[in-house]
Length: 482
Image (cartoon, rainbow, N blue to C red; front, side, top):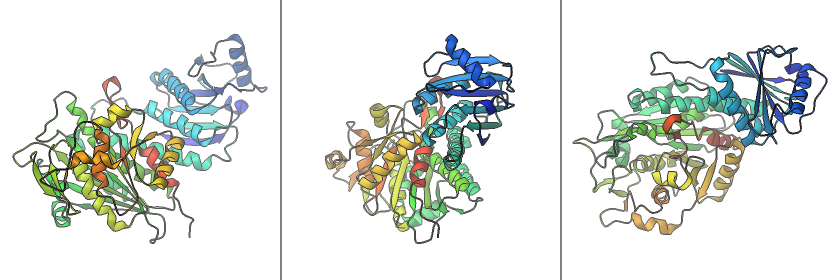
């Protein structure tokens, strides 16, 4: 799906030839002297379009206009939530007609955040997964023209939004694939494909290299599966070599049965989504390839399956991490933190300005925050402030969570330096406290996306989060071109 940004007022929008013209109307709409404005004014005066966000008026073959179908969309004050509600309702209305070309118009020039929300919502509403279906309904929309009264100040944010949409859709693609179509080797191939873009390089390490590095925690998780592990390292080099990179570490458990501490059968199929952190890293690099910003970014993905077998790690086993710290594995279903801790130690070699790990880590975070916000943990004030700003600007929301030292008490054990689980209370926080032990040499943040990365039930599917949040944060760190 392609996007174009155009200067279009109501008079010009009326001449746009398209299958569907979506006209977003704010409460401050002012009519001009043209057929589209006249039609809108009459509809509002007659009460045919309610003054409620998400209200629609669908008109087929409107007289005097060039579009095949006009949908007037009420967005009230034009705030992001109302724009999302309006665009989502409009797309639900027109999707069954299978339009090929859609023109999305604003009655007033939006700010960058509103533009981002509108386009992201349209893309989300038209997304179709097709990879493993023999007769899939593919997305019919091939072109979206975005009309604003003045595009002068929106070109950069438009470009970033389009790149974000494409990054989100790559993340969704890999997260939605069944585990046998998204193995660690498949993820490695996806990363290598990204390396065909300018400024991106990819290295993939296997068992021998990981053993040589001493990644005992990562190796322990991978032992139970015959599927070979992969440690994927991506580099985007857009700034000078001496510019410290941002490192993104994505949990890449391509299927999580829980290992010996096996999960209940119900909804275990959704554990294909346990690599959504890894998928989000791929999505960010997809967007970086399009945007080519002046920043250095490293992506690390420890990828493996967590399965029970005669070789699998057992509850009570003690392993030695790459950092040298020993870990008693009390629960093999707390495996994400084990693969991440070795990747976090590996990240030290890049002398990063910041490291963010992204993981579907704990059910406790789902209980705490649901699916609205991702949990964010960091003791670094500058990083926390930057992520809070990125959360708001991207509308890919996160929420600051505590890291008090007292939460680490439950991780103490007689038999190793640390246990991989504490008790049930504060489970998302104790998981973050475990990871924090491996991050003393750089500013660090942890995103628990267990509630936000996918939806269950009738709407089952990956959301592509937090690609938008990560990209907004990374883009805020651009340096001046040399």
